[in-house]
Image (cartoon, rainbow, N blue to C red; front, side, top):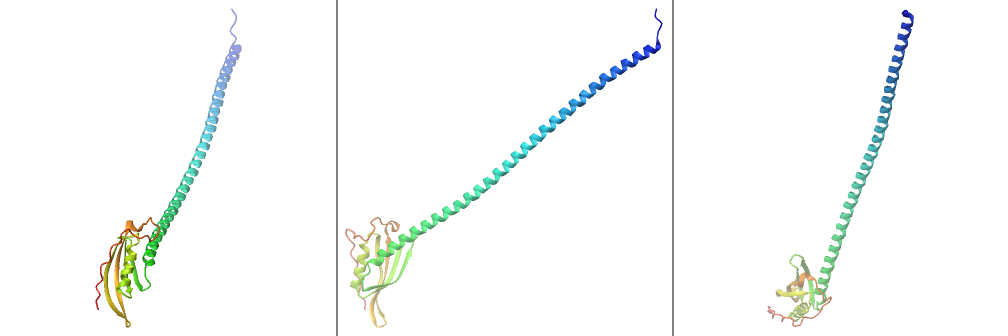
Length: 205
């Protein structure tokens, strides 16, 4: 039997421990390397996601800014359209009333003078006050108004003899109702088929 060598046993034990320690160190180093790799990948992914999130937020902010600008432009456009519509309506209404007044003024005889003409857009009526040299001149003016297709009704409100600065004349007032709100498709003064007879004006002295 071979005698036990304590020195060899210690050398063998030391080599075994060294090998075991080296193996453990390799495992630890591998774990550390794997942890560093995972941490690096995680950091890179986080940076990528953060960058994409920042880009997305920037794009979203830009989109919101563009939306606000578009809404502002639409608001300005709506205001402009409303102003244009209002101006168009005002121009059409002014044109309509100018046409009506031209009809009323176009039939005035030379011996009739108008003092005032008032319009009522709500009731589509015109009130005329003036003076005539004679009752016949007043009757001629009323007949001319009734022959205009724009007016549906022409009524003599009052008529009386007045003395203006030593001249005798007939002061009168006439109420006119427009036909279809003053919209006439005839485009001019066309005589009616059968104009109403002018009521006889009392000749007061």
